[in-house]
Image (cartoon, helix red, strand yellow):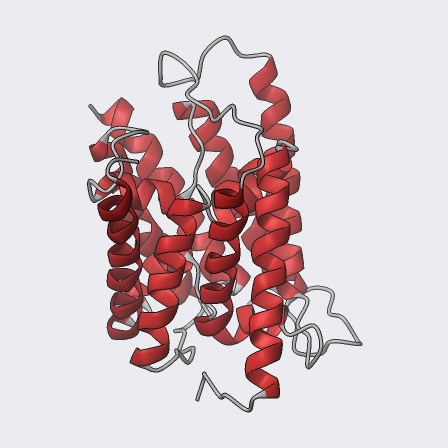
Length: 153
Length: 139
């Protein structure tokens, strides 16, 4: 979407989009930290909004943040002329969703809370959590590929 | 009211825009990043790098602030203990992330990109979260 440098070794990568997308995510998390004094951790905020968790920001603030996610994504999708990524089939989505839900509650966070907010704060727990879920994700994709399991059409 | 609700809405919107622009709402992009033994796609390293650099600066600002701009006090995690629960939970999360190429933020943001698929993922995720609460009592 954004022009700029590309990586000759990885012609399919979109480093500029990635970098600017990352900066937007960082600004969003910075606003949550410096504005509201809280961590922009999506799994925790989702649990808070739905009443699964009793701690954290107000329920109304949690809903505002969650509603913003698709709003922001829609703006980018429209600006880029539409996005049509492939998604996994329902069985894979259900299994993955359950694992993500259970795992983020037990692990107290996900890619945003641990991976962005915690790692940038050099939190020991977040660094360990991030290394763990990255390693698990890498192993999962490697094993599924080795087994010939095609997830995305 | 607006002073309290506008910041999380703006934060969520910026966050969602960043996820979509960075490719996190595209499961092929995410799985490509995790596929380091195959056809690796480094895009997400730029997403994480950009986000972490901005937030590292924000943490520096925080040190010089007595209270947040729109709230009375900072409410931040202060634990540093490494537990089996943290590591086991993160491992389960990573397996789920690898299977479908979706984590919580992009799953919710993708509700406007591929509503049916994203909804199946988000509802399953909430069910998983609820399951933990059910088994453990309160969290």
